[in-house]
Image 1 (spheres, rainbow, N blue to C red):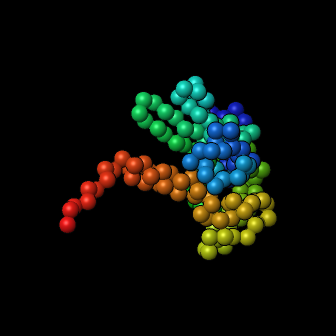
Image 2: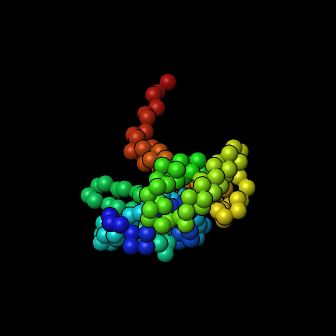
Image 3: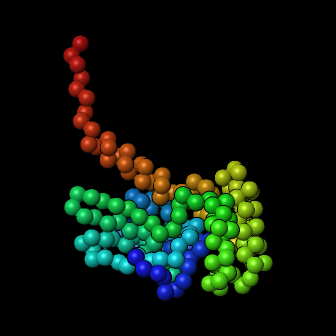
Length: 177
């Protein structure tokens, strides 16, 4: 892990593209070939040897957006973007890190920062039914507007844990009547 030489990827990670391996991976089941995701990071993960890491998705800003790592019997799935976040989480993060973001030139000035926070707060309030309208300046696609679709990787991971637990569980023996 190291600072991203291309800078922060805050707000929306654009055009995350599945790799050949990612297209058939359980973590990304249901994702289109190219999608956007809510994001809040300034670091990137350097790829590891293929024997350890399989890159599942990336974009121009962050080459490793999703990966599977294997070591011995251990398997780890990870994403750089934030499927657990909603728009309110990002609004709060922009507010929390606002001074630093302004110092770093991420926003042109306080007015742009406040406008962005307001847009994310509005998206959060409008999304009570799971879907919110596209708001000017955010360029939200359908994958971001649906709360379940935003959290798809979490649902896929839970499904996989359940599947593996069921596969390891010994079958109950039927008792003779």
